[in-house]
Length: 280
Ligand code: NI
Image 1 (cartoon, rainbow, N blue to C red):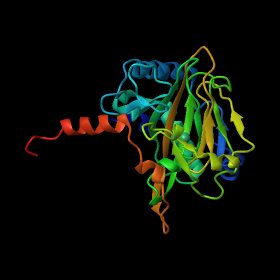
Image 2 (image 1 turned 90 degrees about the horizontal axis):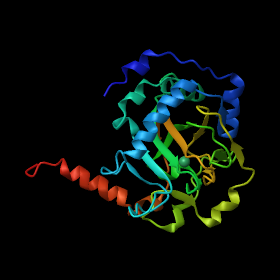
Image 3 (image 1 turned 30 degrees about the vertical axis):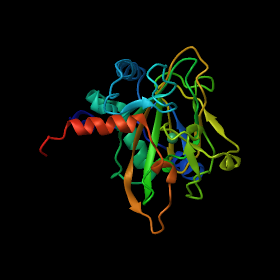
Image 4 (image 1 turned 180 degrees about the vertical axis):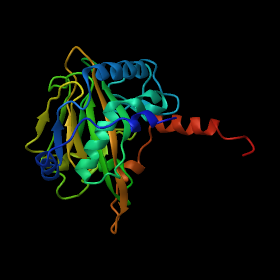
C-alpha cells in the first residue's frame, strides 16, 4: 500500500489563529470544505462501492455500529473501519492532505499524522442516531490520547439527515464519563452515555455542513448525530490523527469495553485464525 501520492500534494487550507483558538476553547470546530466538489464526487463513488460490496464484512471491519449484525435485516448504521485496506486510492485524496494540515495546526505540531479511519453510513429514512458519547470511551484508557477526528460529509449534512452536534466546552474536564453499549446491549459496538450522565448534555450546537465540509473534535468532546429522516443516504468519512498518546499517571476504567460481545469481533477473530498456519 502506498501513501506517496498524498504526501506529494500540498495542503490548500490554512486555519486562522481565531479558528485555532475557537477549537481549543470550545472543543470542536466547523470548517468550510476541505476539498473540491469534484473530489467529493470521486470519494462518494468509492464510498458507495465499499458499502454496496460490504467491504470488510468477513474480517469484521464492516458492521452495524447501531445494531447486532442481524443479516436478515437492513443495518441501521453501517460502519467500515480502515477503508484504505479496501480502497487504497483514498490515500491519494487532497482531503487527506488538508485534514492532516488542520490537525497539525490544531495540535501545533507538524509531526501530527492523519489517515482515513472509518466511514459511517446512515441509510435514507432508517439511519439510526449515533447517541451522545465521547470517543475516548472507546480507547485504551491507560493513555491520554491526543487524537482528533475530522468528520467529513460527502453530501450536504443537515439536521434532517444527521449532521454532527457538539456540547461546547465539554472537553474541558478531560474526564471520561460513564458509558454503556447502545441500549445496554453488549452485542452492539456503539457506545452511549448512561442515563445518569445525560444531564451533562446541554447547550448542544448543530453543525450543518456543505459537501466536503468538516467538523473536528477531540476524544473528550461530547457529540451526537441524529437519525436520517431524509430520502438520501448520509455518508460521513472520518479521518483521524494526531500525536502519540501519553501514558496516564492514574489509569481510568472503561469497563463497558471489556463487556463487548460483538459479532464483528467474532468475525475478526475467525478471519485472523484463517491466517494461522496449522503448525504455527
Ligand atoms: Ni464519536
